Image 1 (cartoon, rainbow, N blue to C red):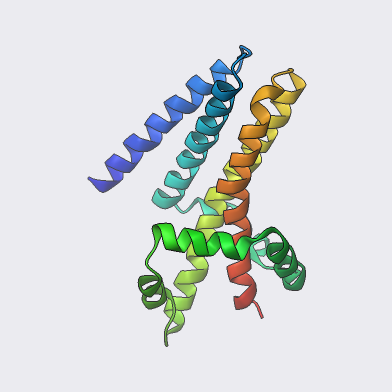
Image 2: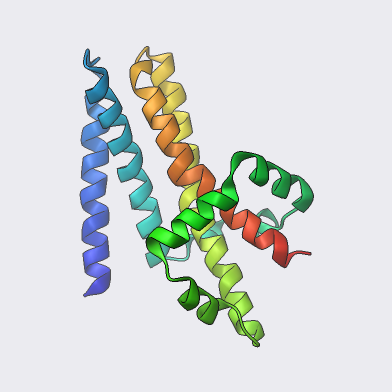
Length: 177
């Protein structure tokens, strides 16, 4: 039953995404409405991939080498400069229970650590795909002179997709020491 509810939510987000994408064909004179459309589009498209990432292990599409952290010091430096650690703390505060996370993924068994790594890979993929798609769509909007939507789309895309990708990679950087 739970999977059907998740699939239904994903389909609703898909319909909303398509409707919003078609609404970008007209230029809105109202900047607030344009920004609202951009934010809703980004959230709904991202939600589709995040939900599908929960249902199916799509993260396995990318090669295992993609998930390896090649320059952990550089990644940590970039994350420090743009505030990824603060973003992670805000996410934990808003959506998760820190004690449950520690109990589920950290402890004396290697299985818990492997589950944590798998979870970070799954979450990263669920945010990476919409980040790339939305970035290309933003470029397309600029090309067709609909750039009024792009600032809201780009900002929302960075907050709900880029930062989580960097956060998951940051988590794995400590594992790959």
